[in-house]
Amino acid sequence: MSVQRFSLRIGVPPVHFAARVDAVVDRALADQRLVGAVVLVAKDGELIHRRAAGSADREAMRTMTEDTLFRLASVSKPIVSTAAMVLVGQGRLKLDEGIERWLPDFQPRLPGAGAVHITPRHLLSHMAGLGYRFFEADDSGPYAQAGVSDGMDMTGITLAENLRRLASVPLLYAPGTSWAYSLAIDVLGAVIERVCDQPLDEAVQALVTGPLGMNDTGFVARDADRLATAYVNDTPAPRRMRELEVVSAFESAVGIRFAPARAFDVGAFPSGGVGMVGSAGDFLRLLEMLRKGGSPLLPPVLVEEMGRDQTHGFTLPDAPGFGFGLGFSVLRDPRAAASPESPGTWRWGGAYGHSWFVDLAQGLSVVAFTNTLYEGMSGTFVTDLRDAVYGADTKAGRG
Image (cartoon, rainbow, N blue to C red; front, side, top):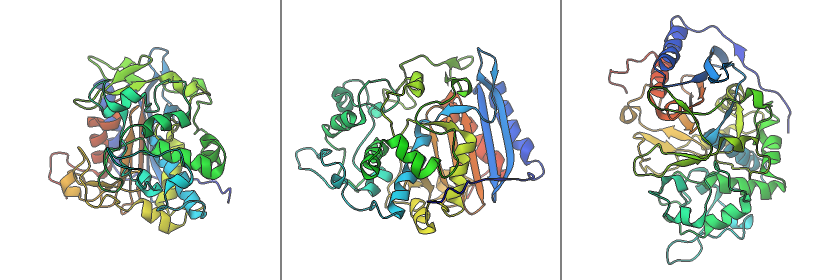
């Protein structure tokens, strides 16, 4: 594999563009919805805006900088998904073969039925019949009763043990027949380990982060002094997150059990879905590599497959107009989504307070990492930033 390093040219932003984006960041900080943020915008391969603002650690008076590290949460998913697609491109993994070849002991079943056929495509698109513990209503749910980890807590178990527990719970639906956000990328991480015959962190470094020069990205924080402190939205201002605090982003859901210290735990199992740490600049490298067609890691046809809606028209919960590709959501209908983005735009986020999108038609890649949940993932800031990038009137009709 080539060890070519990916780089961005520094460009000049359009008139008023920087002012619009900065105004959104400044307003979120002034309203105390965010503690700190790093925002990077690339257009046609040029970095046209970069902004680090607020605090990486408010109590320690440590300023946010462009090279600040963040707990990535679900921003890990497109990185690990890309690693799997590299294996597909190398002919070492097939999208539609059964994962039982690699994980013979992982045999989840439908209620009252036998083992099912789960493929890497099902895992990458979250159509495998799996779920997440944090979506359950309370601690009496089947995942909670089985002791399944969402990958952000501190359990002391191995990835193999977590998969054993996960397989003991009946599937939510037959693979390929519905969509549910899930632990599928954790299972995919185990497949990658078996294909590569090495731990997931080493495999991802060899397949993706190493070749792209994403030197700040891994499954353990390599520089504690650069890691942003995690905050939770509260009144009148965000508060510092406590260890093993449960915070729910959804009504009628128990929520995520967060363990910020996991980022330093070399013994924690590598969660492919949520377990990585990295910088905004590193992640922009990944997005730009994919936007440009995949070189040097992937052929364009596989990038196109990643960006193709795999969900057969299913509606994603709380995401009108969106489907899901192989690693991230895909915009099907801008009007239904009330978005100025182009059809086919890729988008997702991370529970510690991140959002990102790639608009292929406009040549745009946007990364917004914050240290404040859930405002930085799904709050007003995310919509306001999107509209500032496009110069859209948030009160006007779109489409």
